[in-house]
Image 1: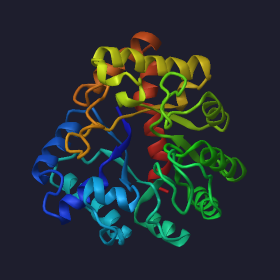
Image 2 (image 1 turned 60 degrees about the vertical axis):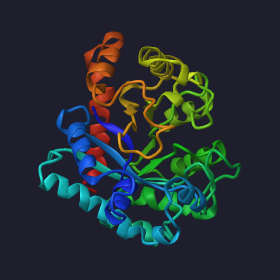
Image 3 (image 1 turned 60 degrees about the horizontal axis):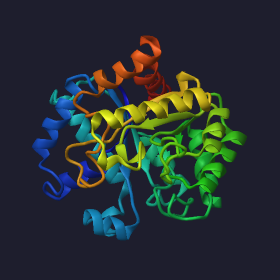
Length: 324
């Protein structure tokens, strides 16, 4: 399958420059090799991700000063993955789309274009907090004037505009800019958000948000992390989570009316992620997700739809933006 959400590039960068800060680099290489060589994950969107400076320091022990050269972080992370391809640790045919989740450290619209030239192809303007561009789920404001300009520039460049983590006001503000400005190849996505009617987490989307996303031809990336499948996640085993995940898929198809060509899958169960209290609570273990989730979807909807949701839709997105 293709995955449309990995918080990987930040971890890679700080492991490189700070002597295995979060995990031994050699172990990471082995883990990445397993993920990509066994065919479970064929590629997808991977992120540099940014919390507020205080949270970066508290959770990851990363200082503001260390975050200043965004272009260096972005470029070195990409170079690291390319070296893994050169060393045959990751197959050359794996497709990566590089993204930034939380655009706090993009200082200007001009810098966004510079990052695009390096290889940036997707942005989530906000993480959970408020920044100069808009507000995430923990704050109440909407998209700022600079945020409108950021979204407009991303559309002009042909980048993916990702609304996961945005609060409702910022979500609708982004969609308003998108509706007025979108071009034929524009891509709008909520890369890792589920159905709030089934799991009342702020990052999941309301029926109104899902309907508006569908109306504008956006993609919904259903998230296999158990925290966003059910509020009772920690009490459940894999099989229980898996059944509830399928309810989210059923809901977006049968209640909201999403076309199956606009549904993708995202997961972030990376073995070397530092936040073990949040991660490692997936419905489908990454080592077997290709077969287990595919089988669930196939049994309910048939092989053609299973291939669309797990492989073809994501591949189409990647091909649209990869060579722009």
